[in-house]
Length: 591
Image 1 (cartoon, helix red, strand yellow):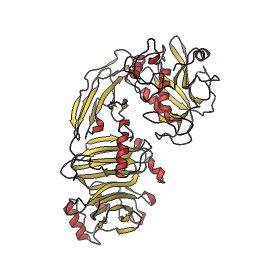
Image 2: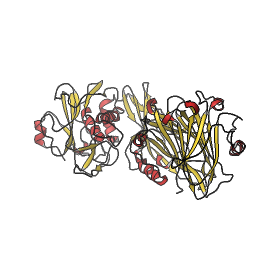
Image 3: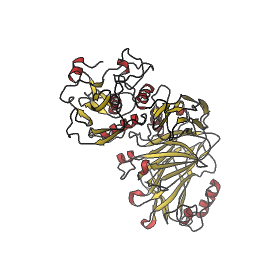
Image 4: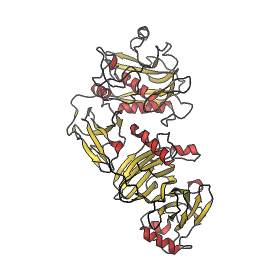
């Protein structure tokens, strides 16, 4: 609904807000502008939103953190004339209109005046002759707030709808930059935009919003698109590359976006070049790809390229033949812990190895654990077996199994540890520690050691928990897919959620990358809910394999269909963060 006219007069010269009204989103037409913009340079905002009582749905710990993310969503589409910058102040710090400070805060009123009917937030700009000098944003504290992606959520309490602060702030910062409500223009425009005056299930900037920012803050003709990306059709597992070129003064920066069918534009965080390559293409990759081309003088948007993904038949007998994880072994709770599940009705022979010392050094690994110890536990924590020197007990059988399975041979008498065991169906963990409290890098391996493939039992749902450092001290999981054809897996890198299970020093932000046998990166994921459209598939897959659900977006995950071969998953910390993390690989049920 429109803002109360009397309220507009009392807050002259201008007030712009987003209100609570639900309406169907119309089709693309054209953006609307207010009639002012910033002269140039940084647009500094003081964030005074404070902290919620609990962690937000997207993993944010403060409201100010949400505001920073909203600013980043807008900044990527601005040219050289303006850039929103932020600093944080106490919510109790003084605020006033026309005090030459751009503030963002919750409030029970708008500088002493009541909010208009159903207004969620208000932007109060102060401009002179088309140049805005100040634009304060007040968020209505009377409503229930969270930060999340996707459709608006209905509350279960008297608070009613729980509103997403991030999308509301993107809307209000859009006002501050000079964008108006296109659906309230004269004549009214039928356009899908986050800048429409009513809040809706739209949660990211739309093409209309982006073109509006580019018009306000770009120098016309300063950059343009030369080569356009081309639509392509690929089969699951193949590689696709989109290319674009910019014409204009260097340097030119490229930002790729993805739109799933019926979804919102989403920025691809790891795509910053003129080419975008996706290896091991998956069904969730199908959709529209476009690039934003920018230089110091402006921005331009490429044409849309459509990726069509054709399915492939999944081989029911394909399986994980083995998995190996390299990581740092510390002391106490910072040892390396591998979990695995034997499913089915029959016992399975398993070869476990903990490799370090001179053996691992021979492969060029530095800082290795001098003397590993391997312990095997059942699901209740009972110790089933342990070993510190592989050739001390059952050495010939272990050597024969390794040779049959294609594992490299262990030197006779080395300090490497190994166990060859037959286990009934169930869940197990193997713990690798250093004798004498020694520390260093080690490799833990788990092999399906049955002489012949049996459909009565399978080795699957493998995971390893360990310390993630920087450089070479990340967690690296190698896996072998064996069988006559491809199989689909759920791969996860868990960090923040581990804190909910009482794990100390949990990695705050994980990043996982999938590589083929040659080391070529196939897939990348930073936040598991990116792209947003894949979230339902991740939740369904986790439920199918019995994995705990993810709520904090800074954990990472991917669903990937892999042909038989060797692959590796690297788990590191975003921005070289360090801490304890968990890498998981689950076989998904046959469709």
